[in-house]
Length: 174
Image 1 (cartoon, rainbow, N blue to C red):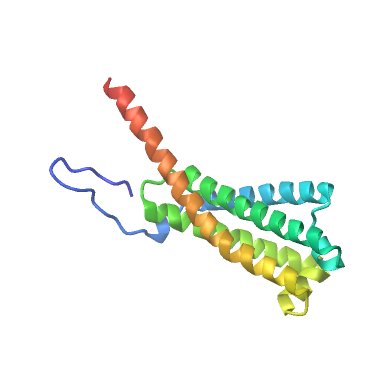
Image 2 (image 1 turned 90 degrees about the horizontal axis):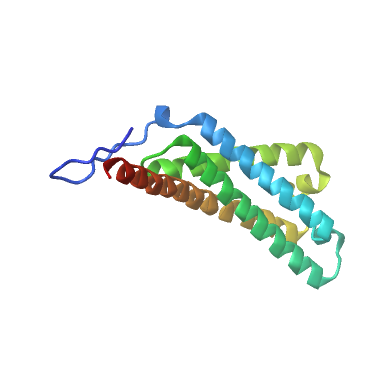
């Protein structure tokens, strides 16, 4: 629901309803997360910064760079996904931006887990708790920070829409 500005009072606050969620925008945000993450994963593999280096037991310096690269790029991917989910939904409240970002993160996470469990023995061992400790910490950290980044992306997507709306209103008045 849209926020209404009263002439003599503050903004009316409306609760978020499940029906007010834009599921197509959430799906698009999830696909954006997966697409950007895949792009960075392929770039990392080309540069020799793959997560596989955490598992193979390469030098400690390359393990640190791989950990940092994976953490930063996957966190950025979740930020992009939350931003797209919020931006494409045409949101008008902060709560809606947060909700769209968080649900986009959840959809992406479920897809990643399902694909990882079906196609990767290493991912399965990480999820079972029998994998390398470094990789387990990476998955845990990216999951938690990914949620935060998706929420921030959702807020940023909503905020950028507000700025555009204010500019458009100003142009119409002038």
